[in-house]
Image (cartoon, rainbow, N blue to C red; front, top):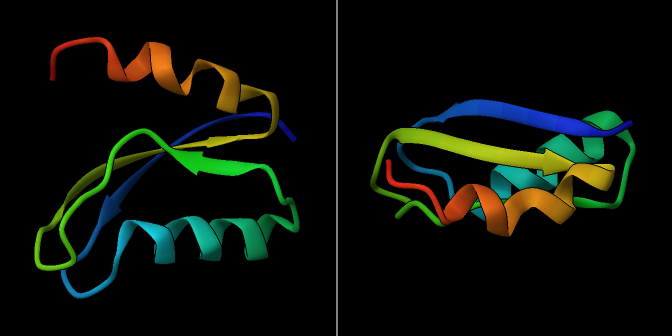
Amino acid sequence: MDGVIVINKPKGITSFDVVHEVSRFLEIKKVGHTGTLDPLAEGVLIVCVGQATKIAELLTSYDK
């Protein structure tokens, strides 16, 4: 499975926690995020899965 998932990360969990849950749910090891949100922050977290992890750096090069 390859693609980009946009997740509204709630307060109280880390970006790593989100990546871990996506990895576990999709049963895929190659999962990453394009930026870290503070555990106390709520906001949009872009998660890349499979081959899409190769474009993570490209996605972070754009302005918000």
